[in-house]
Length: 198
Image 1 (cartoon, rainbow, N blue to C red):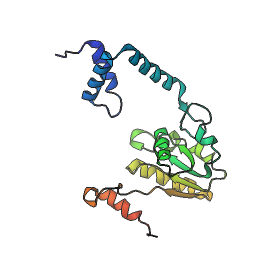
Image 2 (cartoon, helix red, strand yellow):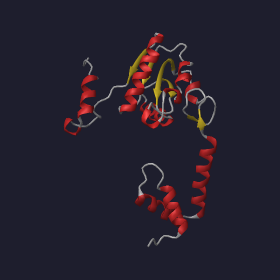
Image 3 (cartoon, one colour):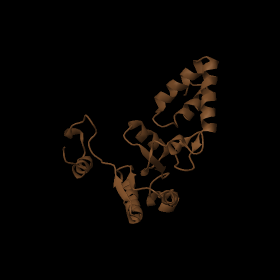
Image 4 (tube, one colour):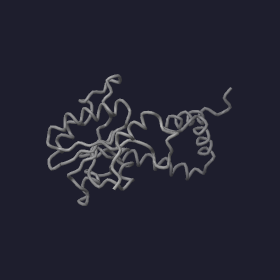
């Protein structure tokens, strides 16, 4: 028998739907929230509502933004000749946090996955093609799973005919790890993506 009151159980269920939150974490968060001061809970609720209401997708690149176009698209310091293609808007944030990329972005909105009924027409590939004026390189920063590989290969074939260099981010060993922790596919990608030491 569940000893949680129904509203708390409903809150646990709602929190449990969030990524990375398991049943125990959801229960701890729910119990913390119902015991917190009402001002703190209202502040959290208002922040959630404001973020959901005010944040959307950039009409140019697909990144998360509060204004149109987003700050990344209007930043004159970014290199407009290099376009980094990612799967989701969150990927833009992750790549940009690295500080290693200073160009512009394009969010596909997914990856080709015939088993899930996602074809090229379901992604923002046509919009990508409309943004190619002045672009000299497209960097494909997609996952290394089967769908990511298929999407990268499809884009390389479709866009490589437009006198644009199409590259893919290197795949391999994470920094600080040893070979004993790498699987066969990771080692294979690391060997294929090797480069000369200068």
